[in-house]
Amino acid sequence: MLGWPGIFRLGLVQAMLGAVVVLTTSTLNRVMVVELALPALLPGLLVALHYAVQLTRPRMGYGSDQGQRRTPWIIGGMAVLALGGFGGAVATAWMGTDHASGVVLATMSFALVGLGVSAAGTSLLVLLAKRVAAPQRAAAATTVWVMMIVGFAVTAGLAGTWLDPYSPQRLMAVSATVSIVAFCVAMLALRGLEGHAPRELAPVPATRTNFRAALAQVAAVAHARSRHLHGIVQCHQQARQQRRQGQLDDHHAVQRRGGQHHHRAQHGLHQAQPEDARPAQHVQPSRSAKALTIMPATNSGTPKPL
Image (cartoon, rainbow, N blue to C red; front, top):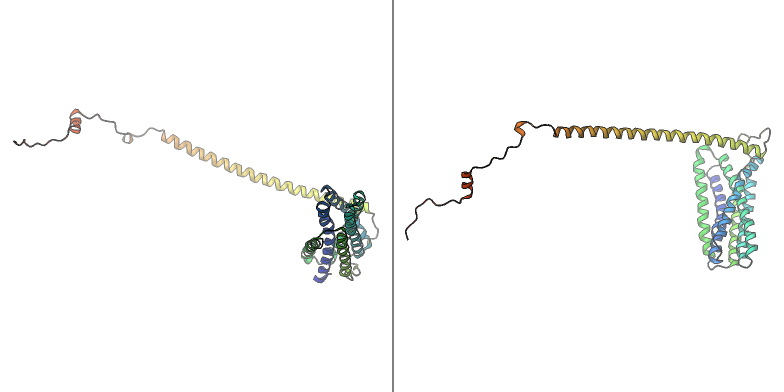
């Protein structure tokens, strides 16, 4: 089983893989669009091609399973990846003088990048899953992927600095340097890492199945899992619908009770009031009272003589 030093070495391989990939799929795209004034559709199609080629990952994994060793597939994948990365730089520089030939070479190079990523990346993840203890797998996978992101960031920053000012010769030199360094570091990191697979970890099957049969088995398992997942999602949706219906029923019940209370209150207001609660009738004041109210008060004393 691999300890943390071995996990770190696998992460270093993943970082080197990411270094070549980011140079091809990010830096070269910027050069095509900004420096060569090519339509952005061209690098977009090339990146899509490199992802489409990675549909061969199941075949790569099947091949490494048959050989019971992952290191040759990782090294071979890194070699193909480095070749494709450098070829992409040469093709980008070539587009400046011969557009059609550069596009043809770029198509081949991006296809090689996809093949290299499929062979190296798939076998590296299988090696990680088989040689790391179960309690450490989650942390190990996180470490490996974080190191790949670090490889992305460091390579993109350094390549942008080295390519200023831009020239086709500088682009090819930077790409060649990154590809060679990535391949050499991956070779050193993988040296003696896998060793010989223990029999309890890698049992040799009595009869080997071909790729189509193995793919059919995986598809059957995937179909069963998808049906099981669909059932879980359906049950969850039904439970949510039942909870929502219960909430609506409670809301309607509260509204009905509120309406009944309101009706009773309105009915109580319209009921006949008792005699003592009736308002007093307006009494017309008498004429004398009106006079007393209207006439101003006078002095009752006798007038004094002048």
